[in-house]
Amino acid sequence: MNSYAQRIMTDLAQKNGHEKEFLQAAEEVLASLSLYLDQHPELESLGILERFVEPERCIVFRVPWVDDNGNVQVSRGYRAQFSSSIGPYKGGIRLHPSVNLGIIKFLGFEQTLKNALTTLPIGGGKGGSDFDPKGKSDNEVMRFCQSFMTELYRHIGADTDVPAGDIGTGAREIGFFYGQYKRITGLYEGVLTGKGLPYGGSLGRTEATGYGLCYFMAEMLGAAGKSFDGQRVVISGSGNVATYAAQKATEMGGKVIAMSDSNGYIVDEDGIDLDIIKQLKQVERKRIKDYTLRRTGARYVDGCAGIWTVPCGIALPCATQNELDLASAKTLVANGCFAVGEGANMPSTLEATEHFLANGVLFGPGKAANAGGVAVSALEMSQNSQRLHWTFEQVDDQLKDIMKSIFQQAATAADACGAPGNYVVGANVAGFIKVVNAMIAQGVV
Image 1 (tube, rainbow, N blue to C red):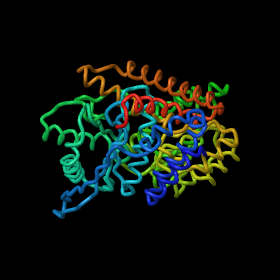
Image 2 (cartoon, rainbow, N blue to C red):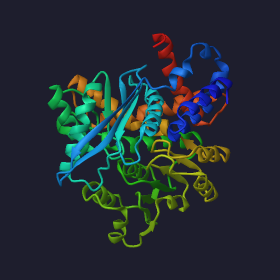
Image 3 (cartoon, rainbow, N blue to C red):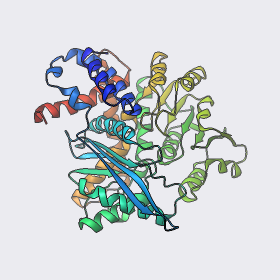
Image 4 (tube, rainbow, N blue to C red):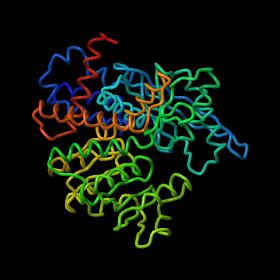
């Protein structure tokens, strides 16, 4: 690692030793920036990395709400406004029991680079709560969301900070958030993305991350003379990202043979029936094991980590951070996997990523490969500002162009750093350059 980057990493570890996910994200980025930093020693005198790794602002607040039994519950809310160098803070709200400040900072840090790669004028941020929407009634979720927004509203706005969905935050939650924001402020503006179509949402937003992942993968595979056509595809997760990645991978000629949820995974050698997945997960909110009750020949296995033992040519981790470790990476490589695309944020551990790269696996890092969701969120912001509503085809065409541009940026930056084909280096450097140029132009802020 470059000496400047190493000094910053050491300092980060001393200050944030308990925030393992944030430190992991920072280490991966700083290590991959080393080649660029070697070429640009002047950045150290400007204190660029010191500012780059430190969020502009972190907000922590309590979220009291009343359950259906009349009992008062208290959750903890977070918002990390990481970087506004190239635009208003932009990033989702994650609702999951695992959420803590370190995870929110890691997500905001990654979001800053991801958003820069889209070439759209949006900065990086992330928020969330340790509230778990699973098993809660609609009224309980509504009361939580209203309480959460009662604090958050004062920190966000269409030109300040624009939250969106993430794990645990879907159309229902966005609707409740937006209703409370409008109720308090009296403003009908594009302050949240992922909204429902009747009140300012964009066609294509639900599909965007999964579709965008496959558009990026198609570019990466094509550059290596490969494609989805005829390949066995394994996808972790069964939410929107995984579902629409499966749909687009199938359209591109792949055969998706395994998907998962937090309890276990299914294998269907005839190809996953996405109509059943959508009915189970989007309509009935059931577990993926119920797929086997509706599909002859499919099997279910307890324990979601085992999904990476299913032989495949292409693996798309779309569930959560650090779901794919070194042991799983070794198994995938041994079973013939030649391409991995991250649909989730940092789903591969550092060791897993290094193993893929060392063994010639085509690897699409999350901040590049899954940027389609935030890209279409930015397009939703544009539609809101113009009071326009674009067709699905308009949005999808722009999404394809954006993902192609992201791949080209990553490939060009990797080449310039002497690391051709290393899209981890390429994505980090390309995003970093855009953010840093804006930071330098704006002075010491």
